[in-house]
Image (tube, rainbow, N blue to C red; front, top):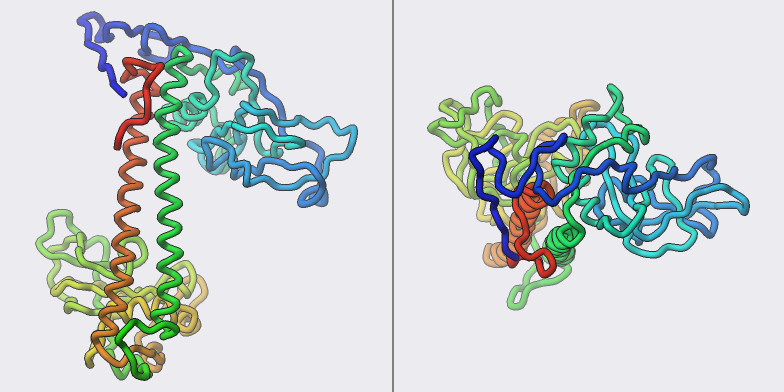
Length: 438
């Protein structure tokens, strides 16, 4: 695939081959169209009762299937009972669907296209359908355009409401969009679809690797399966017998400074940023009073506004001298034990038990004294503990690398959408354009 960046002219800063229109500067061979000129709308299911759903020989496309996809997932359909003589609109291959209501204006009018022939299938009542009038519009291109940042600005501008936002079909009909010639629409759609295919392949691979890790954790962290060369009965101890348990000291967000001299960690970051192993702490402060980490400490959050189960989230920090904020429970070994293994063990085996030890209703709290009598079981040798920890951390590293690659492709796709769907970058050969090698 090759791109062509337009040269600029002196007159009005409009590039050669581009033109000024009522929706802005677009390529000279693109057109501005209203939705009413290129297609017609129809309603989703109407007059249905609660007892009509979940049974029958017909199907409907759920609301979230429209909201979350560029292309309708035909494996995500639900049953509905349609009686003979009902005046309901069946969906057809090539139809586009729009949600009419959302909690934010940016999510009003999200779009998904149906790419397969489906029999006896209808649309949910919270969306409307849109059927193109002829074949000079590529529906996949249109779906990408509508769901892009550019499309979101167009639709959010006509979202009506205060606490909940709605899209009027009448206003929708008069919205204006830029349309390239059909070959360029199809080429853009092929490129973006190819990127989506890569992202979906990575999603499936991440799910597969995550499932394998889950099964491996269940076997290795409970002793169901022993690694070759290791024998002996596992040790059972109370957590207070193997770990010193104490807390960090007050360190609020207000004390964080982008150019601070010292690294620090707040309890909220244990939820949002870090997994079982913490190798690089990024937050900074100039505040230098409190409790500092020691390599191998296990950290747990001490409070949350969600559920008690979230407090049973252990992370081992592999850095010395990190300032630890209040509401961080610190487990520091007082005997020979691999703390990375213990973090995995706590997260997999002891979560429900720890959750029962939490207190509070709107804010859930976990206290260090509640963990002292927690029974933990672990392999008799440090070598076996470390080997299990290494296997699991290697799995995590592989999954993290795949997630990083997925984010890279998602960013590339977002950039490509911003350039291709607005004509800022043109495809030199629209007929043969393929997914770029990433």
